[in-house]
Length: 155
Image (cartoon, rainbow, N blue to C red; front, side, top):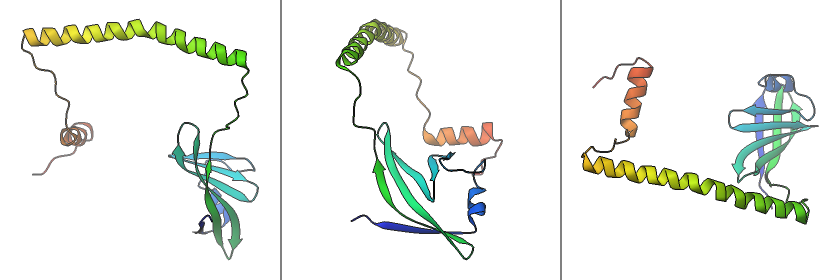
């Protein structure tokens, strides 16, 4: 049995939908930061969490408006990718050949990059020049606040 979730919004549907950049209509999809909101008939689908490449958890809720409030009542549902592969065998073979060719073409580039890194490491060892150390979190914070935002550090 799935757990049912209930949320209330103090205001009308118009107040709620005024959050979005344009007036919603049936089938509208909106992006709010890391979330997706889709309006379908008298339901609102909230994309809560991305799971994998093309699936995710959605809060699918019915809208009920009473006394100047909106109530969202619904469940969390996992909506995944379409499991059915509609490619023919010939298309699958061509896709596999393409992947193999891409790997063959990329391999020399990777080997050249690894050779460059090895030569760079040897030169640094010979001239005794240390590698640059990456900044830690605190140093990055100070740089951002002082240099970029013009703040002053108080000890």
